[in-house]
Every structure is written in structure tokens, then in C-alpha cells.
Amino acid sequence: MRSLKADRKPKAGRRPKPVRRSVGARAKPEPPVFGKRKRSPDSRFTRLVRAVRAVFSFRHPMVWVAVSVATVLLAGILLAGGYVTAARNAGGRAIGAVTADAGFGIASVRLTGNHRTQPADILTALGFQPGESIFAADMQSARAQLLKLTWVADAEVRRQYPDSISITLVEKLPFALWETANGTYVVERSGRTITLVNPAEFPHLPYLIGDGAPEPAAEFIEAVDAHRAVSARVKALQRVSGRRWNLILDDQVVVELPEEGWQSQLDVLEHLIVDKGVLERDISEIDLRARDNYFFVLRNGQKQQSTRGNAA
Image (cartoon, rainbow, N blue to C red):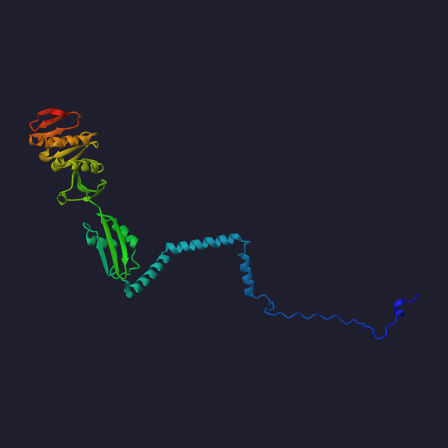
């Protein structure tokens, strides 16, 4: 049978398609690359970088732990050796010198509120040096040192630019004197001791005697002061056995008060002094510890008893 393809004739007006002949395979040219360099053979540096990256990859967490520990140890060594502090101090001194030269050096210290605290003690506590940079002066440390002074209850330390330091003190208030075996202390209203003093320097203060007298004294002193005739004759207030009070009056007359109800007995004592003139008699002791009966001890040792309605 004859092939139909072979018998077909090309149509008029069309050229037969050229037959491609097999030619040896040619290598396709590489497309041009823009902005990238051709990869060069690995150098020593490249291999080193790859090795370091491989070691410090997330696949080796122990390496990171070791590096962290080494960093902490190095920081500790620097701190312990004082290198960081020395560098910081050196920088601070340099800055301080510059600011001082610019007119910000401490030239004066202004004091207010100091009545019993000596200026020399204040300046010593502050520790500021003339010409020191006002910015380098430690206000908090200066205040802490001032609070250690005997009479200082509170203190405020402020910078006043360009070259002055302002100090405002609040001093402790003396409330009473307290006689002890070690000497006489001046105490605050709260009962806290301030310092040993010469009693002659505070003649107007109440005088306390006895262990533990300062702490409960405020209420008792105010009650005594409210009785004019009594307070005018009181020389000392004595705490007895930590429980009750005695009053030491003129001529060493001792008035014994009860542990409880002593407020009303102060009223009785005021009445005895003003209306009965009891202190004009030769009495050495008045015992008001009983609620209804009063005992008087004469200087010759004789005792007399009276009731509330027939006192003295």
C-alpha cells in the first residue's frame, strides 16, 4: 500500500517546510547576572567565618552558656578590682573641674534654723569643699550626716545656683530634764533623750527623777501645770517603782500621789495649798494615795490624819 503522506502534494503557493538537520548540541550560554559576584573559591577567612558561625549556632547552646558565664565573671572582676569605680570617679572629677571653672563651684553655705547646733559642726558634717562643683555635691548623703548631729531632728539641703548651698534645720525641742546616775539629760516630749547637759542651762524645764520617768511624763507635767498653786511650788517630779508619781515641793515637802486617780488628787492638793495653807505648816510629807483619808507627816515625825471634808 502506498503512503498517503508521500502522495500528498504541496498546495500551490506554499513552500515546503525546511527540514532541520541535526547539528551537534550546543551549550546554552549562562544568563547575565547583575548585582552579584560570582562565587569565588573558599578562602581561609571564609572557612574561618563558617567555622565560627557553626560553633555559635543555636545547635550549640552550651557555648552560649559558657560565653555568658565568662562575661559575668569578667564584669565581676572589673567591679571587684575597682576599675569601673575608678573610671567613674575619674570622669566625675573631670566633669566637676569643668563645671567649677565655669562658675558652678561651691562658694557659700547658708544656714537657717540652727539654734543649738554649731555652724562648724554643720560644715564638718556636710563635707563640702570650697570650690567643689555644685553638681557633684551629694545632697542625700549630706542630709543623712546632718541627721546624726545631736540636736538635729530634720534637715533640708538644697542647691542654690550658681554657687551656694542652702541648709534648713529643724532642731529637737527640749521638754524636761532627767536626772540619772550618769548625769542629767535633756529629753524630748516623747521621752527620747537628747544629750547630757548642765541643768543650769535649762532652769525653766521640769525636773524628772526616777527610772523610766521621761516616757510617761508629758501627760503628768501638763496636768501639774494646769494647777497654778501646785506648779508654782514643784521642784521635781519623781517616778516611783515605774507605777506612780511623787511631787517634790518647796522645802523638800513630798506629796505622794496614787497610781490611779491622781488627776483628782491634784485638785485636792491645789485646794489644800490655796484654801487651807497646808504648806505654811511644819509639814514634810503629804500622803494623798488614799481616796478619802489624807495623812500629813510633820517634821518632828508626828503623823496626822484628815478626811476629805476636814483636810488639815
